[in-house]
Every structure is written in C-alpha cells, then in structure tokens.
Length: 244
Ligand code: MN
Image (cartoon, rainbow, N blue to C red; front, top):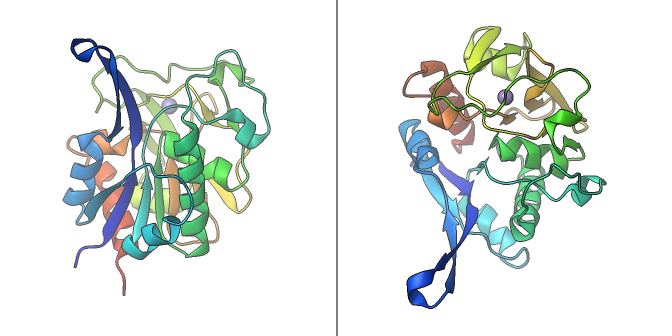
C-alpha cells in the first residue's frame, strides 16, 4: 500500500451576498499539494482543522507522514514576540493543530515535510523563532514575493553541502520560487539551516537527529513539472514514510 501522507489545510472564510450575508468557513488546500504527493507515490489525505484534543491520537493512527502546507502567518506570541506592524493575518485554531501535529510526529519519529508557512510552523513548534516580516532582517533584502509564474525560480539559494537537502537536490546552487514575507530567524534546537538565499534569509532547515524532518521556504509543489529536482523532494519524503 502507498504511504498515507496527511496534509494540513487552510481556513477560507467568505461571505455570500446572495444568501443574505451568510458566512462560509471552508477547509481549503491547493491542488498542487495533493497532485505532487500522488505523483511521488504517496496517498494524499487532507487533515481537517479540528480542535486539538481527543482526535489527536487518531490522526497518528491514520498517517505515515506529515506534510505542513503553506498559508498565513503564525501568532508571534507562540515564539515570545509581540505583533509587529507588518505581520499578516493569523489562524489560531490552525496554529494549535499544526503545533500539536508537529510535536506528535517528532515524538513518533514520523517524517515531516514542511512547505512555506510549514517551515515556520516546524521551527516554532520545536523552539525556534521567526522574522515577522523580512524587512526586520539586518542586511538588505531581495524580492521574496515574485510576480512571475508560480513555477518560476525567481531567486537563487545556496545549499549547504553534506545535508539531506543537498543529497536530494544534487547541486549547491538552485533557483527556487518565492512567495513569503516571513522567514526563520533563530533555528530550533536539533535543527540546522540547509539553504540560504543570497541576502542571507534561511530557505531550508532540517533535523540533525531524525532521518527526514525537512522544511523549505519555497514551493516545490508548484515547481516539479518544470524542475525534476523538486519532485525528488516529494519522492524522498514519501519513501521515508513507507512503513517497513
Ligand atoms: Mn525566498
């Protein structure tokens, strides 16, 4: 059987004018995530945003690996900071669920692949901090919110040699897409940075203790059809999730 990959999702809130202003709240996940996991040989399952509690252990009975997907900002109080003027919207319920899923996966030695907001959740859940807006970074900052097509590699990253990421990508310089205004500041204990953009922003982190706990600030699920190395990330993750 294919490994079951649990993918977290976003909350979308909309108001339908035609129904007298009824408010709709939906679990939403981009098709790119499920397509990439399926293409890599995994069985994708979207994890609904439930309250943290009794259902937590049931998530872990059903998944072989955790994929933390992209989305809006995290509550900065979770890493001990007051909200900066440039921070965006947050989703308190999603923060709680993803923090619990991340810590639970690490306790159970489940592989984790974390994308965009996901790398930020991974880092904060395990004791790291974030730049609430990359303008807070010391050195001049490049454009990390591209206007080009979603698959386009708009900036370069330097990949640290002899890391999990360098093994998967097979080169030390790589062009990636970029859709973020926050980034990892202090790397969580037990992790190391494995890629940086040319302005010094951390673009990937990985566990130095577990075989596959990897976060990337870019979006490989939008790149793989043009860039085979991006699919290697998903394939290596799904292989790590295969129950032996
Ligand atoms: Mn970037």
